[in-house]
Figure 1: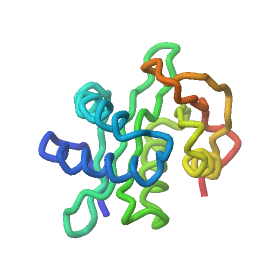
Figure 2: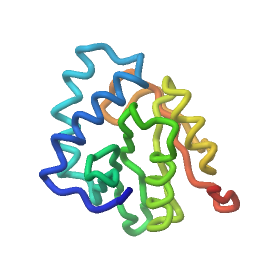
Figure 3: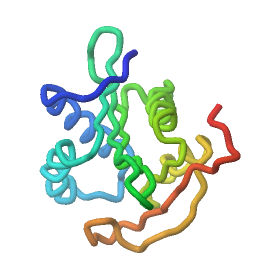
Figure 4: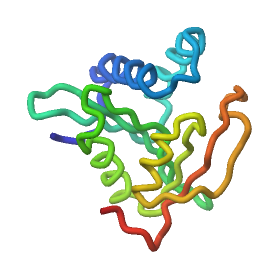
Length: 156
């Protein structure tokens, strides 16, 4: 597998990965929610500071992540991480997270509280909950857990 900066030609595959992953893991979202989120995700591909695609040995995209680099007092943030559900449980999310932490050891991430598997994944990677909000970044009623990489916890 190879993690590299995503290019515009990766976007269609990444959007499909996002949708399959959301349908597999975000049972709290309705079909209308997914339809409304799809164009926002496409916009986020261009707006995020750093976007990476994970390609398998055959060149197929199987996951991606977006990072916002630190700036002044703002810490680096893992804005999005999605793996095709066909590859869940095979360490691809872990590889993407390790790549992010190699670049930015002081990393924050938000996770939907209604996605307990994702929260458990990040906690296993050494992130700790530092806060919670009742709504997501767009003001929708999807509570978020705010996590931060604990400096004393290694990712192994």
